[in-house]
Each structure stands twice: as structure tokens, then as C-alpha cells.
Image 1: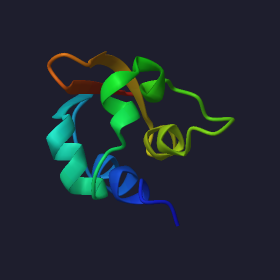
Image 2 (image 1 turned 120 degrees about the vertical axis):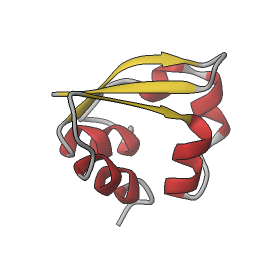
Image 3 (image 1 turned 135 degrees about the vertical axis):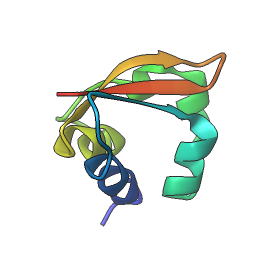
Image 4 (image 1 turned 180 degrees about the vertical axis):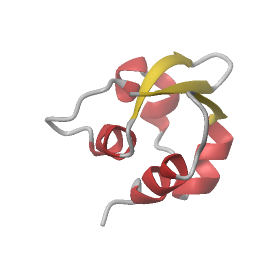
Length: 80
């Protein structure tokens, strides 16, 4: 089980067409984001295949990253 399973469950429980979260909120949900999540927008890509296990969490929950703002440390997920 991936540490990002908690994010998947969190998003599965969310309502509405869009959810915006601060990185610190996601930190709390998953037990800490890696430094690369704060440095590289590619970390937030909607890549189901490959090494991005974090992306599988939101994609499997039925969400996609619509926008990530590294400066403000915020991400918006839209329902897929």
C-alpha cells in the first residue's frame, strides 16, 4: 500500500467538481510530501503509467491535477 493511498481516499470522499489543496494539507494527509513535490511541477503530472505512484492515487480516485502553483504551494484537482 502506497503512502498516497490516503490521498486517494481523501479525494474519493470529496464532493464537487474541483478541490483545491495547500501542500501543507496534503502533507498532513500523506505524512509528508517529498521535496521534489515543491520543486518540480512534473511531480504533479497526470501520469498513470511509469514511476509516479502519487499520480495513480488521484487518477484512481477519479481526479486530475488541473493546476499546480509551486510558489503558492497549492494544487487544484478537477474531477475527471
